[in-house]
Image (cartoon, rainbow, N blue to C red):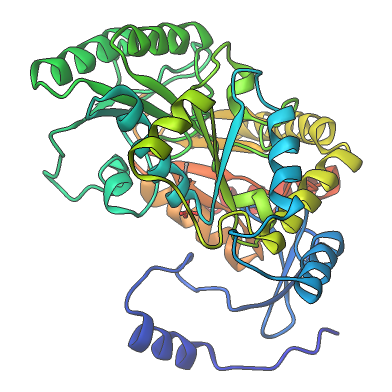
Amino acid sequence: NVPYPQMEQSRLCSRRSTVLGESPLFYEDPVHVVGGESVWLFDSDGQRYLDAYNNVQVVGHTNSAVADAIGGQARKLTTHTRYLHEAPVRLAERLLATMPDKLDRVLFVNSGSEATDVAWRLAKAATGNNGAIVSENAYHGITDAVAEQSSTIWPESFSPEHVETIEPPVDERFHRSNSNSEPVKDMTESLDSLERQGLGTAAFMFDSLFTSDGIYPPDKIQLGKMTDRVREAGGLVIADEVQTGHGRCGSDLWGFQSTDIVPDIVTIGKPMGNGHPVAAVVTQSDIASTLYDQMGFFSTFGGNPVSCAAALAVLDQIQQRDLLTHVSAVGEYLKESLEELAADYELIGEVRQRGLMIGIEIVKDQDSWEPAPRQTTAVVNGLRQRQVLIGSSGKNDNVLKIRPPLIFEKGHVDHLLERLNEVLSEQ
Ligand code: PMP
C-alpha cells in the first residue's frame, strides 16, 4: 500500500550510467529505493527490504526526530560558519563529554574523507613527519591524500612510498586465513622502514574494528604495543571511527573504547547525521593549534547549524532510546543465532562480532579454510532476491558483512536468519 511511482529499472540504470558513469551499485540486480522507514527500505514497486547493511541511518530510516531537527533549523536559519552560533559549540561540548579527557578540540567538516584528510594534515603538522601506516586492506576515503592510505582500493602494483601497511592485530579467538603475521613486529619494521627513507612516521591510522580488512575485533594487548611503538617513533595514533562510531560496537559510543588506547585524533562521520552530511575530527588543542598556526582552518559548511541540529538529534536518540545497551543485547543475540546456524554449514568458517558489526567468514570447507568469494557473492545476491540487504568485505571478499541500523530488533534478527538459512541451503 505504498504509493510510489513506477519507473522502469533498466531504463534508469542506463540513464544513470550515461550521466554518472560506471560507479558501482550494490547487487547484481540493483534495488531501486524510493522510501524508507525504521529498518525497512521500499522499492519502486512498493516491496519492502530488511536493511541489515546500513551504518548511516543508525537511528532508523526517515527518523522523525532527526527530520524535525533538520527541518526546524532549516526553516529558522541556514548559514555558513563565520557567524557566532550556539549549535557547533553545543555539539562539540556533547561530543567531547563522550571522549577521553585529553581530547579537547573539535573541527567540523562534511564527510568522513574530509575528516581523515584533516586528521592526516594535523598529524603531519604536529609531528613534522611524512610517513603513514595503515592496515593491509584499509579504507579511509576519497581525497588524494587519504586514497593513498586506502590500501583496499589501490590498483595492482600501486604502493605509495610514504605508506606502509600492517596486518590487523587479530584477537586470538579468531582465525585469519593464510596468515602467519606478527603484527607488533610488522609495525616495528614499518616504522623502521619509514625512518630509513627519511620520512619518519606522522601517523598510524586504523579503523577500530578493521572493518574493510574483514571485521577483526582487535587484540587489545597487541594493538596497545603497536600504538606504543608508533608513539616512541614520534608518530600519532588516529582512530578512524567513521564506520565504528556512534554506538555501532554497543557498550560504548566509540569503538576504540573497547581497547586501552587513547588516540591522539579521532575521526567521525557517516552515522553522525543519520544521512545528513556531517563529520568531525576530535583531537587535542596542542595538535589542533599546529594546523591553525601553519595555515588556518575553515570550512564553509563544517559545523553549520542544520548539520549540527541533525548530529545533536542523533546523539539524543542514541541516549533516549538507550541504544548502547540495545546494540549489545541484539548484537549478542545475532551472534549466538549465527553460531547456531554455522553448526549446519561447512561454508561458515567463523562469526566475528562486536555490537552490531558482524563478519561471517565464508570458506570452501572447515579443513582448508580456503576463502570462498564466489559463494559469498551468491549469498549476498540470494538474500537481496529475498529482500534482505547485507554486504561483504575483506581482502578476499569472502566475509559477509552485517551492519544494520542500531534499532534492529530480535524479530529482525529472526527474519534475517530464516532467509540466510534458505540461501545457504542452496549453495
Ligand atoms: N573512513 C572509513 C573507515 C570509512 O568507512 C569511510 C567510508 N566508507 C570513510 C572514512 C570515508 O567517508 P566518506 O565516504 O563519508 O567520505
